[in-house]
Image (cartoon, rainbow, N blue to C red; front, side, top):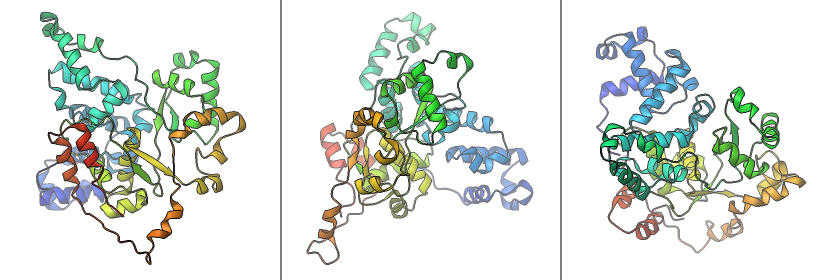
Length: 397
């Protein structure tokens, strides 16, 4: 995404926010650009929201309440048709009870209500919405045609589009290592839980491990469809991933708003290598590690990357959440086999010696600008061609 160059004043402002300067300690040059202390507080919140920072870890915690901060953030995200902030799900999903499915349904409805084209939804937002709602370009056009066929009713009451949207998320692949997290239930929701659901919830609350592989998938999906749980896709600095085919990618437009995590996604596709850890990629990209972890987590959600699992480390380390040794008991074996085939086992470790410093092989590396990836996706080529070429735009070792 191309943005206007940051001014010197803007750089000083961001530096002051990072250092958590109070109004009284602000340099006079910055104070001169702000009308009051209240304006300074407003800019703090605005910049923290644009950077998708967690309230309790940023300067905004000193100038506003947690609820106010996240409510303002959700207004900003909805206005810009932005990607759902999965890395902030602990508050947005658990406390605010805003599910990704409901968020994208509301987004699609707003686009329809304003009679904007499907292409107005940014690439990654459209892809995630398709994954959860099942509404892609063709479905969007079909719903709009049905609405417009009502003529005067559509002009008077745009809410009829909402009646044509799905009421529950569609089925999507869930990896065994994804975490199952609970929202804050209401008393009425708690009373309606079945015995199996109560047992699962009790297990999540009492045990540290919450991997999907531990539970009955039908019970999990039933709770998810009612918005009572959400999924955490944990990514750690030592994790490695293999980029796969980009099934479900939507070529609309790049975002016109600031989102450091979304901007890293193209870079992840370009430089990601199954031999490099997330921490090493962050060093290569000179990116913030937590933001790169959030970007890698999103790529895994959409099935565009697969976690590389070293079988030796799984068998030796009992602390790995969801690993067979620490997580799967005898009665869980049938459940574990349900989805474990999707996990990628790295069987190529023994081949590493062939590429050592004394080998006869030559290493070649291509340094590619991440923007080239977006240009390729926006080009007028067939899906099969640009997907196959896209996957070649990464480091070759």
